[in-house]
Image (cartoon, rainbow, N blue to C red; front, side, top):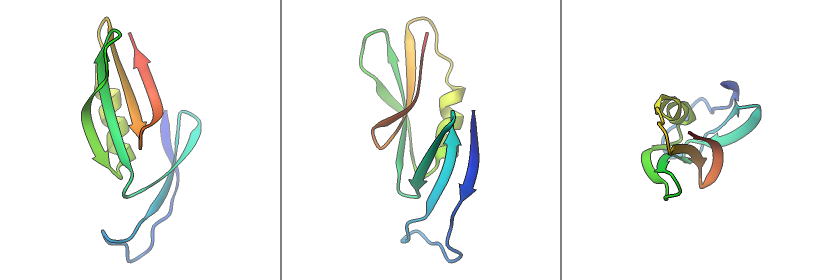
Length: 91
């Protein structure tokens, strides 16, 4: 389960400024910025993961796509933030 606890933005935020945001995902508080890299990866059995979707600074879309992937027998998926594991599921 994910919900946004707080969002901190400067009033004149543009692409050159770093905007810090905070969210709660599965009971863990996550701080990220508009330049943070999120990756949704899928793998099969004991094989390596491959990146299916990649997002910059958008945790909401990353979680949306992660939850939208149906995994069948032998498949696995994970959500990464700057190569740090946020969520993982396997069947």
